[in-house]
Amino acid sequence: MDLPVMPPVKPMLAKPAAEIPPGSHYEAKWDGFRALVFRDGDEILIGSRSAKPLTRYFPELVDALRSRLPPRCVVDGEIVVARGGRLDFDALLERIHPADSRVRMLAQHTPASFVVFDVLALGDRALLDTPLEERRALILRELRDVAAPVHIAPATRDVDTARRWFEQFEGAGLDGVMAKRPSLLYRPDQRLMTKVKHERTADCVLAGFRFHRSGPVVGSLLLGLHDSSGVLQHVGVCASFPMRRREELVRELEPLRMPSVAGHPWADWQHEEAHATSRMPGAPSRWTGTKDLSWVPLRPERVCEVAYDHMQGDRFRHTARFRRWRADRDPASCTYAQLEEPVGYDLARVLTPSGPPPGE
Image (cartoon, helix red, strand yellow):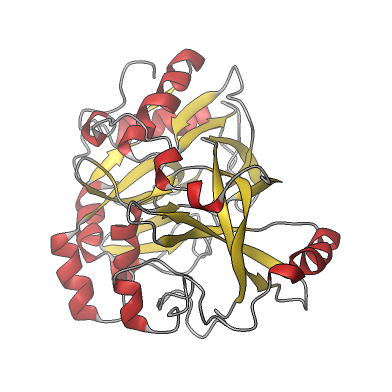
């Protein structure tokens, strides 16, 4: 492989904002694996956000990218998997498997797509110092005849269209809007773009915590919600506390600590078969490897309000953000029923095969 921009390269990143800024180039925010694709003739390399190769996990994409991308190029985009007319991140996670036979089977049963939203090199030309609006024009020209499973990300310069996408596209599994300056140069691993994500709140039962890797202070709080049968299901964690607050939480939660998990709703967390019927912390995962998943059980008597982006199935898709304690809430009242469901939206209306929708 001999390209003007050579791997490994880390993609350009974004910083969060509360509102969609005016006067920008806007794209939907995809919920998948960020990836840079390097093509030099028949050679294809798919690099992850951390610059590690993803190529072997998506053989069906390798063939599609080889036939649909320009002969020599480097493009930035997102690997996604769709099921039931919306993005399915759980199905995407399943694609990362050590067994080649299973990778091949999943490539047939849950095939991936690749959504292109930037280009770093084309032919012999590096485009890192080319403004975004020019890079976008090159994408529209060079990929004008592209077909599924490779797609051009829809984009617009109209802020009202971006606001509409922010509301509508969540129903298809997308999780917000990206805003970029039209003059933006491509700067790997720098947070120069803006991401605006959905935020909702939920009152959750505090049922345990994990210690921080740095020492005997709280690392994350374990959150639960009751299902329709009254069973407390693990829905995720909240973290990102200042170090002083982590120290305070250890003392603050001491009265709730249980001597063991006996009698706790998640007492069977170490038994693999228990995870088949209930969600609890410590589920076996090839992602966690040898990571210590032990946790400190707390009597599930305290409620906290947390902010979250969106749900992935029956859990929070990302780490939640602590907002406040809710002394006025009964833990038994913390159920899934309080969660807001986005209005469904067909993913096919986002991934238009003919290119970007009106508003480009």
